[in-house]
Amino acid sequence: MRRTILAIALFLTVAIGLSGMPVLAWEPATPVSSNAVYLVNSDTGSVIYEKNATQKIYPASITKLTTSLVVMDKYANSLDTVITVTKEDLATIAGTGSSVLGLKVGEQISVRQLLHGMLIKSGNDCAVVLARATSGSIPNFVSAMNAKAKKLGATHTHYANPDGLHDPNHYTTAADVYKIAHTFMSSDFLADVVDTPSYTVPATNVTPAVKIQNTNSLIVGGSPYYLSDVKGIKTGTTTEAGACLVSIAQRKALTYYAIVMGGTETTAGSTVNNTAFADTKALYQWVLKDFKMRQLLDTTTPQEQVPLQYASKQKNITLVPEKQFNSLLPTSVTAASVKLVPHNLPKQIAAPVKQGQRVCTADVMLNNQKLGTIWLVASQDAARSTPLYIMATASAFFNSIWFKIVCVLIDVLFILYLVWAHNAGHRRRGGRGQNRGNYRR
Image (cartoon, rainbow, N blue to C red; front, side, top):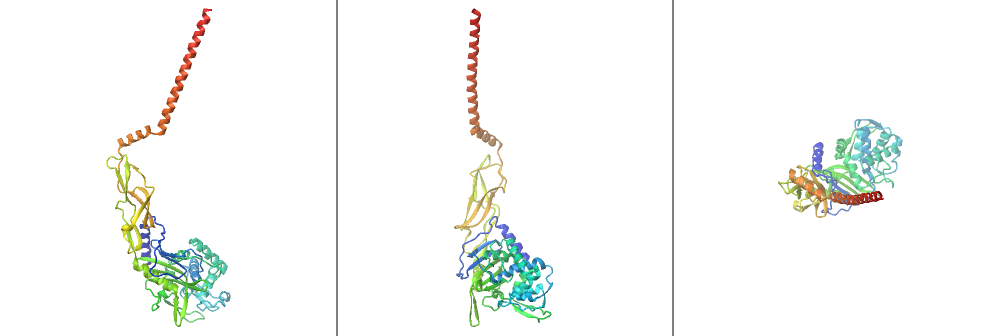
């Protein structure tokens, strides 16, 4: 199923043409209170909504997405490798009061179970054990995390630990988190883990089996934040980072990522109010209901006409889009609202022209928003008329500046020749007269 969705995503991305990653100024139906938000349709790369997306923020346990990627680089094909928990591992997070699975010194547990404990229950003890086992030490692992972030294009991200506990030098941006999350979800194993509402960690040599519940309330049935379209991904909370949630939702072959950071979490009796959860659910309900994929341009409807040179059977060539153009838009937007703004549209085109020949690019505009860029191409062949071409070429030559320069040079040379000939004749006549005078004496 996931491969099918990825294939559809690739098709839709190609159908966009040259659009890149357009950022559109849509406003959600419900105001967003969280500090930094990045809502993306990953099929087209369209940023549906953003708020402080490039602002420096603290990631809390969202860090564990990168932790998982570095671990998978080593253990993807050996997830059942057993690791022994050490005293030094647990000392790393002792006294922090942070979320843990409850590992014990000497406990033997597989990489697979540690990843479940880290991603579902957000166990910091699992994170440090995995880091040490993967790279030999926490500093070495953190270096690998920073290298991984850089490789993924998360250039405004820096890590100081594998668990997300606060450190002033441990930061990211919502836009960077999207890049990391998108790569994270390309792993079938990791995607399945974070879409698990609850999980039973098997018994180990020192601990009986334990059932853990996912910290992401949007995938837990019975939660007021539950939304069936959501398939993960990870929560995070510290005082400095606030309440954070990175998630993915899928409906009708469309996939969205919501990066919601810097929310608040308060408790009233037994009720927990988490604005990161509330904002995420509201964003998904809005985009899943009000947006759909629209075909705005096809490959047959004429968009521009350009005069032809050297063609006897037709005066103009019609330009059409090279590819159909699809865009994710609110259902209230009509195709008639979309306009094309060509770049470097030629005043005329010289025949011969081949059908499909690229002529110029054009921006696809909706009001003042750029949806993408396409190529405009010739809709048909246009043959060149040889007589017209010869006459036009000759006319162009005789009217060219070079022809005029040559004519002037010829005139100058001719005048110089006449002057030279005149002077030469005068000298010859003068010489003959001198000779006759000498003879008479």
